[in-house]
Image 1 (tube, helix red, strand yellow):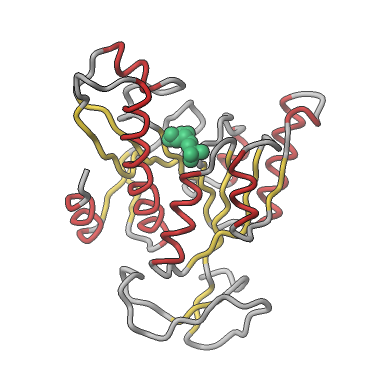
Image 2: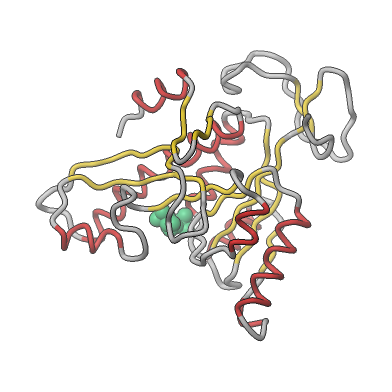
Length: 250
Ligand code: GRF
C-alpha cells in the first residue's frame, strides 16, 4: 500500500516516461483522488559538487517520474552542492560532524533527520561518509549509492588514480543498494569505458562522471518503478530495464 502523503500524480505508463496521460504538477496540500498515486519521496545525501544530484533532479523533471526530491542533507555546509540544491528550490539540511561531540552523536542526528524527512528512497550522491548500520537497517533496500568504479573492484577513495596505477583497461561506475560495508551491497547497474593510453586521473574522472550522470537516474527510476527484484545478493532487472541497460550508450 502506498503511503498517502506528499504530492500526487495521475497514473502513468509502466515506464513512467512516455505517458501521454494527464500529469498533475505537484501541489501542497494534496488533493486525494481514486486515480491518484502518491509521489515517492527522494532524499539525497551529498558532501560535494552535487552533479549527480543535479542529474537526478533533471531526469525526475524531464521524464516526469511519479516521485520528487524532497530535500538534500549535507555533512558539509560549504559543499557546492548545497547552493546548487537551494538554486533548484530544495530544502537543504546541514548536519555537520563538527557540531557533535563524537561520531555516534553525529550518526544519531543524521539518522533522526533522515527518518523525520520520511523518504521512500535515500540516494547517496557523493556522500563521503559511511552510514551507521542502524540507519542502513532502518531503510534496508531503500538506500542507493553510486561509486566511481566497477565494484567490487576499487572500493573506497581515489578510484581513478588507483585504476590507472593498476593498469586496468576497463573502468566505470556502479549503482548499488547500500549495505553496512564500504561500497558494498547488491549491484543494480554498471556501465564501463575503455581506459585509453592518453587518460590521466582528470580525464578518466570526467569520462566516468559522464557515465554516472546517465546511470544513476536510470537505476533510481527502475527502483522507483518497482522493476528491481532482490534475490539474495543479486538484483534482478525486469526485461524493460535490461533492454535499457543494453541500449545505454556506454
Ligand atoms: C561521484 O564520482 C560519485 O561516484 C562519488 O562521488 C562523486 C560525487 O560527485 N560517490 P558529485 O558531487 O555528484 O558531482
